[in-house]
Image (cartoon, rainbow, N blue to C red):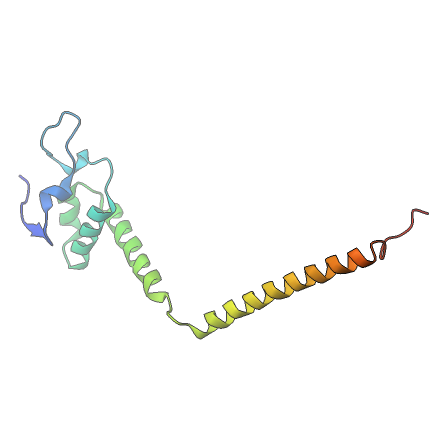
Length: 128
């Protein structure tokens, strides 16, 4: 039978899967064709709280390797989120350098166009 305890406002029955094509009640998680990001997050949170991977695997009908993969991806996402720097002085310097390079490139292009307009044949070789 389905376990009906709640995890942060979500009934475990809701985590276990969608209804089959015949519209019967969800009988097993094996019927779930796709797991939403929200449901995966709830499962990973349960793993991080210390629930057994084996027990969750049996309860949800998801292989252990898949649960571990979800957990590793979630932890990698946390790492990426925490590595972002706010108001990084090096990033500001880099942005300023890029802006200045853009200005200089535009200035060079304008000067080259002016030079070609004044002396259009300078720098060209004769056809001899």
